[in-house]
Length: 360
Image 1 (cartoon, rainbow, N blue to C red):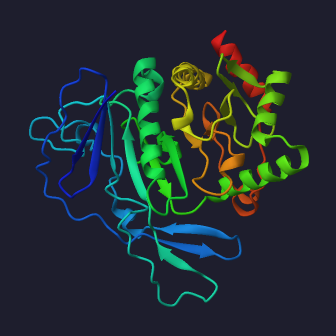
Image 2 (tube, one colour):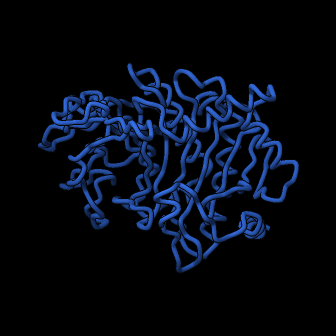
């Protein structure tokens, strides 16, 4: 992998990840840009014991521009984008409209109740462009190119986890207008949180309880149970298993687990990274074939936090979709949105069977 670091016109970092032999990517950014906002803050909800990120400057971020004005395409001719180079393989850069910032200074909020703590939204938000091809998708990448993305995730996880105050690194992709994507170019994001998010806290607390009771790892036992029954396994290889969880919340939900317990993406071996690209591309292509159309989804890496709870973590990827049929979406209504109690309209076993049949 060829790694090149440069700086954008407003001081943000940009990193090119290219296949060996690629040309040099250091191209000046001629744009005149306003300074990046440092107003991000976090506020603590004492009732739920959760931190909420407040980033009001994001209201004016770029929203669904036409393809010929895409800010994630390479810069060519007189059109200058977020990527100054005229081409790239994979590129990562600091978000121009970050939810969290290493320079955040928005912590002091007058008039808050005594019970509500606030602090600057310290952290970092990055954009990961999977390819320079605007019309592509992760599912259309070659295994070699997908492996380059995995290596970029690993690189950024290592660097961001080392930043002062970062509690967890979250790599993810939002895909499709139905999910709320504001840029159609194939890309993902990475958040370096200053706190451990609620879902991770709950999972690790449950894993700690399970370990105390059984002496075993919760995630490893879940994987072993799914592999043993096989009823919801979509596909499996030497190093990975993809399955629909028995208590799936979403109409389409697939989890991908490595067979070896590791805390995060950097800990994956070369063989495990190579194997992942084949399994993941296979799963994504099955998902697109499910309704014979691109499936909107959220693809979320669950990595270990940098501090307490790391000993119970088990790296895995969750892909979820709100598409409950070819022409219907699942909306989070009363029970889900207000109470967090999910009601699913489809049997997980049926979804797994349909996804298996697509690949047969």
